[in-house]
Image (tube, rainbow, N blue to C red; front, side):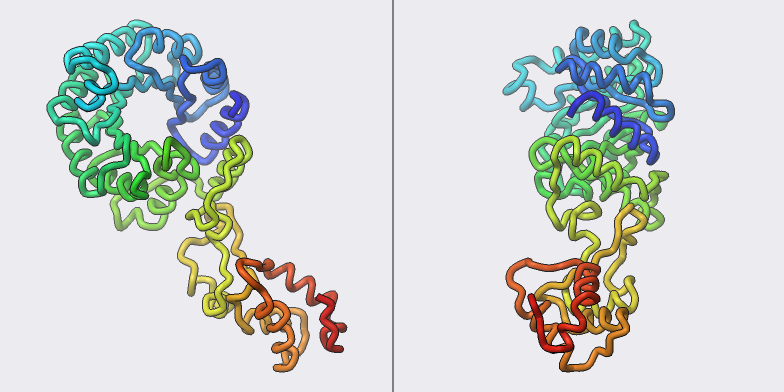
Length: 368
């Protein structure tokens, strides 16, 4: 996406209450550099984060782009022996020294908000993690991000890891989650992490991200909004604005989520099954736990091959048309029984069709 699109999305995120927004990786491209500049200029309530490697030049570029006011630098640390040997080809001591040196360089430039990003922490050895964390805290880091980079952990395992990290740091240090969805457990792991002591979560709109993606912001927010009292945490995110944010992201990257995707999927607040429709037409709560309007969505009822006569009777009553059995049978054959596959129409479309064709239908002419 362009720098301007990143700014637009960042402003929408700020409007719904997100308090830390990642600008990108300023050293990686002119687009991310410009995006960092724009967020520094236009965000007023949220802090923004730049991603940097444990390399001084990355820090210099990030500070040149975004300054130091309201600007967090997340310094990437190599946190597993697997990555040290097979990717980096460096020792543990070198990994610790580069984190220490990079953070010291950053504070020398006036950076006051430093975050340590522990890449592959989920497969990292405890003593290595502790060495990296201690070094970062000594150099002024105030946030520690515990990354399940490959999405390999189960919720209980991730909770144990977060709990261990929380025991290593002072209470004023923010412990943040960063989960990937390779097992489809990113949201569950994030919830487990918060219950284990994490006070910040890294999430993405619609779960976009590397491979299978990251924790979906809207899923975590929904859980916090509906189950927070039970789980022991809450959110101040304005849920009604989430779909607006999603639409901006979708337009920027041509994103089409799975139809059944929670919260944002086309079918998330839609029903076609006749048994469900019979209940929802009387009381939406019978088959709807999440309220669509709370997430900027609308409830939808579709007429398709799984629907029943109840929905047709409902439409006829709305149009003041007597729903006699002969007419219902005719309409059922035409609008429901004759459909194949996933073909369906939204309730309002069928209602409008019936309103204009009623005279012909009563006369036995379908015209369909």
